[in-house]
Every structure is written in C-alpha cells, then in structure tokens.
Amino acid sequence: MTTLVTLASPEDLTRVQRELQRRGLWTQPVFNPEGAPEGLSISQHSNHSVRDDLLAIEGVRSVLMPNSSHRLLDGLAHQPYLLPCIGRPDLPMGGGTPPILAAGPCAAESPEQVHASAALVQSAGGVMLRGGAFKPRTSPYAFSGHGKAALGWLRDAASDHGLALVSEVLGQEHVDAVANAVDILQIGSRNMQNFALLRTVGSARKAVMLKRGAAATLDEWRQSAEHLLVGGAPVVIFCERGIRGSDPETRNTLDLAGLALLKHVDGYLVFSDPSHGAGRRELISHLAKASLAAGADGLLLETHPHAETALSDGPQALDGDALRAIGRHMGLNVQNDVATEPTPHPGALA
Ligand code: PEP
Ligand code: MN
Image (cartoon, rainbow, N blue to C red; front, top):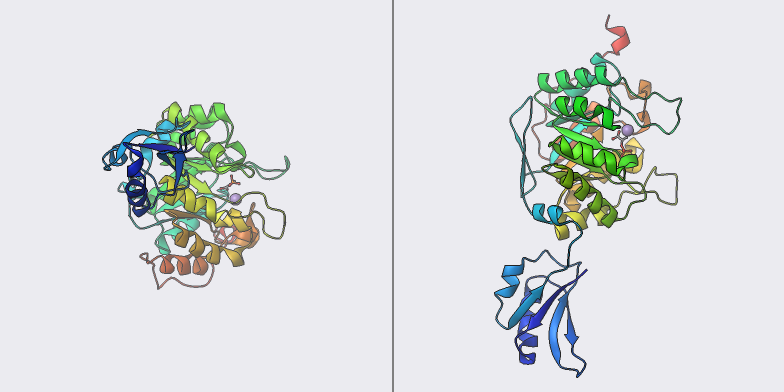
C-alpha cells in the first residue's frame, strides 16, 4: 500500500520529489493518460510519513493515505510506552530509551528454580523476568507447566528481585489469572492467529508481547496486533522469535530484516528472542548483539540455573556468566562479584 501525493502543477514534480527524497522517502512519479506528471507515489518501504507534514510541502495539492487495515496499530507508531509494573517502578520502552533485558527460564519448574533464575536476571542488569506457567508443547506427553501455582512463584520472584514479569497465556480460561500476575501477557508463536484468544487477552487491558507465528508474514503479524488493540490492549510489543527455515541445524531463522522493518519503518516496539530463534546457546550472544544492532527495543532470553536439568529448552538456556556478558555488552548495571559456580541444584537445597 502506497501513499499518493498529488501535485499543484506538473512543474512542481522535481521540487516535490527532491523534498520527499530529502526526508528519506522513496518515490515514483505518477503520470496522467496524456503523459503529464500528476503526482508521486511513496513506497510503503519508506520512512513513516505524517499526512500534515506532506501537505505542508510547497507544490503538494493533496495527500491520499492508504486505508490501513491496522489503524489502531498505526496510532502507536513511533510512540514510547511507559509499562505499568506491579513490583517495581514503571518501565519506559522505545522512543530512544535504552534496550531492555528480559530473561528467565523457558518454564517455571519450582519456586527455587524461579527464584534462582530471577537472581541471575537481576545480576545481569535485567529488568524483566520471563517464564512459562502454561507451556505449549509439541508432544502431548512433554512437561506442560505447573499452571496457576507457577504464576505465584513467578510473581513472588519478580517482585523480590525488583523485576517486571512477562508470561504466556495459552487459553482464554486463564486470561484473568495470568493478567493478575504479570505486567505483560505473552502470546506464543503457536497462538499468534488464535483470534478469539487475542480478543480476550486484549480485554485484560494490559500490555501484550506478541510472538511471531513460525510461518507468519509481517502483515499477518501486524493484523494480529490489531486484534489485540481492538480487544482493548493499550500496547503491543512485537517479539521476533524466528520463522520456519529450511535447515533444522538452527531451530528457526531469526528474521532480523523483519525486525528492522517493524522497528525503523513502521516504528513499533520490537523485542528479539534469539533463544527460540537459534535453539543453541552458543549462538545466542551473537544473535542478541545482531538484534540490538538491528534496532531491538529489548531482548527476551532463556536462562536456567541448571540448564542440564531443564524440563524444556535446556539446549538454548544461558548460564549466569553468559547472561551477564550480554548485560555488559548492553551497558547494564551488571553485578561483577557474582560467584561463577552454579547455584546449588534445588534438589540439593533441602
Ligand atoms: C517461550 O517463550 O517459551 C515460547 C514457547 O516461545 P514461542 O511461542 O516463541 O515458541
Ligand atoms: Mn522456550
């Protein structure tokens, strides 16, 4: 979908085109059937443009903006967001604020494991804990989370360590319970187009982190965000977590071009989840840095105090040292005096 700028007269073509190009806009002249220039189309891949700014250019007669299929989302473009938080001061995001580190285990496995994970996150300068209470698993026989009990462990650990909390909601019947515990509701990749769930999650009127479906186009992703906003969500944070590629050696293909487009062209809040994007812990730090270079407003990373015993996604879980190295790269307030030996296994505590 392109924006069309019409000219006051054909002689205005060069001046208007130069001005649009100066603003970083990609243009293409449009001619009438007689061959006279009558306007310029602005590519959808250009920078974001505001209708009134275009109208103010000398030589511009009118501006026809495309009928957007996600007008609520458009209204959030290039806007910073102050995330209301339960257990810590509210958290600014986007709009030039430094990127955020959110991390935690794939699944909340026990109160001890969640608390140890939150301590790792805090030691790395992270400001948000992640962790699944309700886990979508490909195999029906795999560990699928401790449900509502785990929400309580996550909430306590987040508040004890001064962290915000994000956790996935899998079904409409759990929206209230998850919304009461978290600061951000996560919609997982597998549910990106579960439109009934999106509407109900929106009605909780809390920030939503929307993971990208494994085969979703960017526009399908935007439209899912619009479902959340129509439902009542105040903001949607996109989270790129990799799309289905052609090679299983990396679990998914982290789409940094898509991330950069949503961030820099559309102007939305975008996080990157290189943990699910790569599936291998030795790749995570490289992809985390690449994501930040591409413009990510935050990182969502998996970490585990004992990855070798993790009930899900152990191979992609970072240990404390690796997480703190990323925190240092981000210029965060990293605790340098943390012992390098692993936290005692929860089973050995009692
Ligand atoms: C997760 O964050 O643990 C998760 C299940 O991610 P995704 O929905 O991206 O697979
Ligand atoms: Mn996971």
